[in-house]
Image 1 (cartoon, helix red, strand yellow):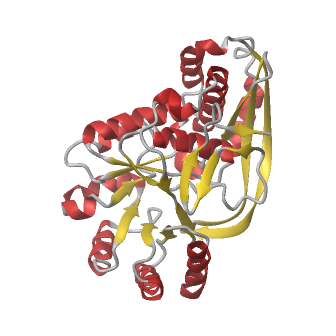
Image 2 (cartoon, rainbow, N blue to C red):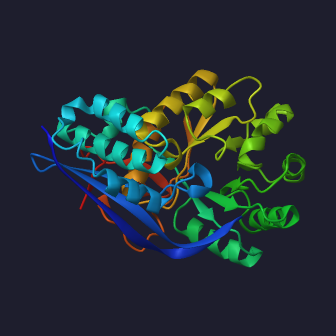
Length: 354
């Protein structure tokens, strides 16, 4: 079965809930959408929304490169040559995570749809379901408590609170959450590279009674090595995010002593499912837990990340809420959300459809 046509477009997806992180406010997002049309009418969907702040390329870069390339070399190729086609993509676009992930996901979707199996079955499902965190941006205490209530009332069990502006204010927000809601929610935090090593240490000491599940990327990406001499009980709670882009980063971070006990894998950083699975293997061999994160993305790529996550032994945390606040999406189906838990349908491929 050959690839008959390839459609590429850019979609502007408004957010129903704008939010702030330590370096910007976000109220709408664009995604590049790729459709691989097979001869039999099967469509493989891919999507990309890379962050220039992390990988040096954004949606416009991804869209423009795809349009210039036109992907004529991919047309008429047999989808049964799936591994070879992935190799070609990763070679041709080695320096462009956005292009890689859009094509990687579309190829995975088309190939496993043709096999008539879910993508997770292709890699071997290891986990049936896990709770996902939902994100509370940087805001005041009252707004934080109100948004937390909305999420908890909606069945979510895990809150990820964005911090990183001023440490004292950060800690006050977390204390207010515990006073208001007790031990009911699991609380994770994301400092978005907003602290120094000393502030990271202070945070752990000042919040020892708040039962914080993990701390995502507390220091600048290139400074994470400074955390290697932190006490082990603190390092095991640190998730490397911006410091972990690809397999090479994973191998470096896995060296003993490692600065983080958790790897946060995002398809938009590493370039797709294939590279994500390679990072997952490095983590498994090193006894490092996996967290699967996202940007503001279509259901397409969020679901692809979930397939990869649930086919990895050492997946412990999901942070795949990037499509929840989209005012519209370009597909239906995909993941199943129930009481804050994410699982997968038994539909072929990603289980998404127009």
